[in-house]
Image: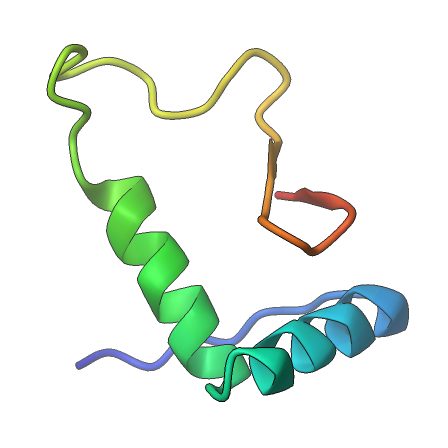
Length: 67
């Protein structure tokens, strides 16, 4: 498994920590699951760009764009 380093603002990190605690998991597990889902090709759109126009997607319960 590869390790990566991310930089996020304090408020985003605070919200993600809260979301992780509410789900009885870790920030790393949330990010890992999100990236796993993101990297999986869509069944109807194999080979397409996984990002919508503008490049941002909203994370569930995070209240902000994830880029």
